[in-house]
Image (cartoon, rainbow, N blue to C red):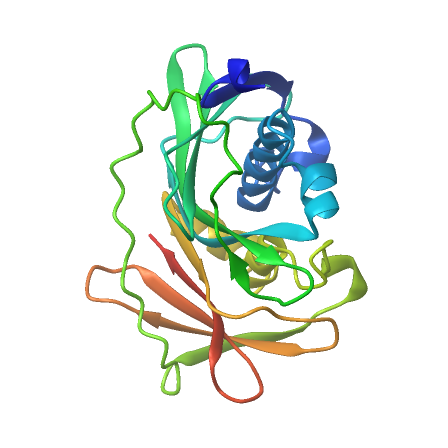
Length: 243
């Protein structure tokens, strides 16, 4: 199985269902592409959905950063590329790029962990990757931010009640649906004016069906928007930085 190596590539087309109001690939759909391609690659190592379910495990993403140079438009042909870095005991890194010919459209760096369905706790990564896999693709040179978790004084953008359609096989709100709910707090006109080129997301605690998230926003010194999805107890479950 390790013949697949540390990387995996596939060709795809930007379909209408993946696009925003400007006919460009939407940011949530871009994260969906990454997640789906990561799953296909993982399946070659028997650590996709079936393999993890057999172990009674599931994957979670703890933080992700995406740098966008240009979004493709409807019906563009693109190439998706994902690759992994060596894991440590408790976490691993997976990266992603979307390309048009030799042009890189956007790049993603992400940190993952494995959780037990039975205990709800992180389990060791040992033994999940083949011993003879060659890690020969460098990670993107993106540094994760330190986003403060206290949004008490921040502006309220809106609230979102988590629904059945937001829940994934882990039993909690899917990570991309946090991003959809957050961006849904802005109008199409506002999102166009923001012209987002960097989006960083950090997942603090899991959220479940029926919970209400309050999205609050502040501006940082560098002009970026820092957003927290705050639960009923006032603690942030999800953090984001948009620039």
